[in-house]
Length: 227
Image 1 (cartoon, rainbow, N blue to C red):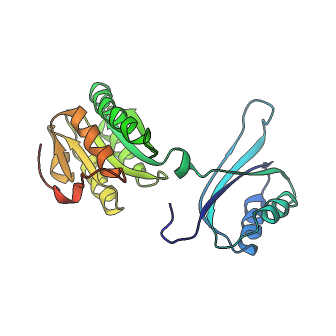
Image 2: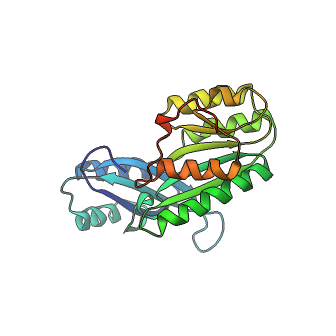
């Protein structure tokens, strides 16, 4: 999603894994007046594309000739193919991130997935991502990384004991503009979260309702409360 009114587009490229390819691609996009908002790249290790790289980027524009942009990208040395595709925001939409212990994560996901299904069947796009983890350092690193995840819209911390570096990471995630829901647990994390919910299924429902464009639940109106 963009902050302005310019439409969002995406392109997927396959290129040789060489130095300078990303620089040359970005130069072509800039020459066409498009503004790159997100970029992802990786190298294939197996299969028919082994040793080659994939580059996906989303960009906004007001009046870019997409056919000419694709043609010019294909003329970049070492670029093997370039195709347009729908941006991830149109396919997977906003992301609900759930981190914590396996049993609690599963219950939060149960509520989130069922609530997301209710909204997505009416045309919205809300996806649910989970990772069960143990250990303060592992949890802290995972929470910190949420602020770097594309389209991450809300974080739910599902566990029985979280604090220390996890609480510090929660503060950083909130500073990045991502609200945090925590289960009612031991440790200091509940004191740092925007909302504390005892029932894990309800926590998942609340998370999806907050990111939904049609839901009437707004975490800002109940911030600091416990349910």
